[in-house]
Image 1 (cartoon, rainbow, N blue to C red):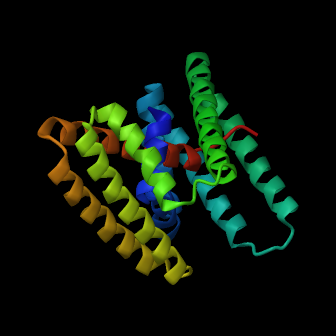
Image 2: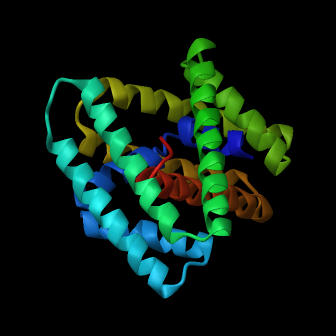
Length: 237
């Protein structure tokens, strides 16, 4: 399921995670980020009200200091990495003093799981680059095969779906080449392409298939949201 969701992101050009991270940096204050991650940990670890207050204070301090480090335009990347690492280790140490033994164990397992998930995503992207999955026809073929399996597409449906994805992949490549540095224009264009693709697919898929496809996309969105939260949360050094 993870590979399929990742492929939907890459092939359809949804860029949910990248866009969300950009918006996070642009619009979220340290207080908002601390509030969001605290809410996530409160749910995952069943934090008490007192623990939640302490965790939020710790995360607010971290978020504020991270903002300060990001604002430092030093060319010494190694020094910046070390500074981030030191801050994350400090945060983990402070959180460990707030959590119970069971909560610390759950928190460590949760971070380890997300770390493995990120590694899996990086390996897949590296594999796609190595295998030359840049041709629109190749990307469309791979995506169609995945949906054919998940949605039980007929041969006629598969042919139509592939044609839709080939056209979309070609348009995505054209947009990337046309506006390489205009992120705002690209976001709007990709959004329009996604909506057009969904509309075309609806005309091909049955009601049940549309429901399953919508569920897959919803799961992908939630998965990326979880990744975004974990990236904002303190990590092990």
